[in-house]
Length: 174
Image 1 (cartoon, rainbow, N blue to C red):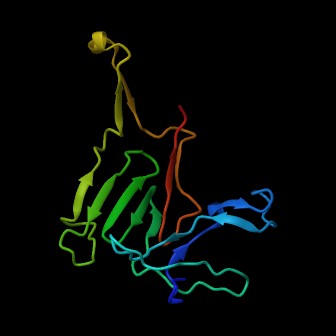
Image 2 (image 1 turned 180 degrees about the horizontal axis):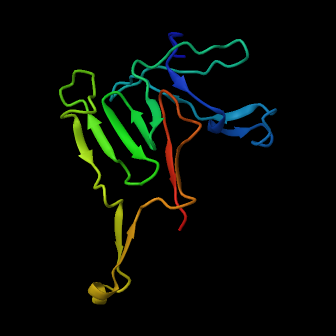
Image 3 (image 1 turned 180 degrees about the vertical axis):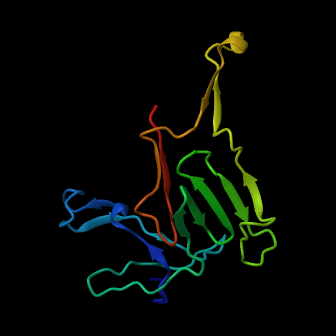
């Protein structure tokens, strides 16, 4: 809530609790520090006033972001839609981003089957990295690593994801 008592859109979850009065794992203990995600319009050379957090069992959150982030899953892919862009992340064949679309014509609509597609991954290769242990023998000692998903690897949406902040995690066994 701002100094004018106008509620600002915010997002916080139990994973955003940084410290409690007592053991942080003990959810019966009061929260000491929590990470709050919010969107505020602050001038580049100024201040936008003072903000504070209201809390308690009778407090409800009403302000919603104008363009919330949405996350959907289907057919082995995660789609993160930020409004001006959509990112596709494969859960079966990691390529960082499988596809990226942006609202090129700024009509507030990202069209996934159009000219809005600006990047697409090579279907035969994931992310590729080269390791050269001895640069003097580079042609004979180059090791290539690719980011193909194997058994035990996973790509998933973190539980702290919401309308202002979303986390997609990729875990790989080395």
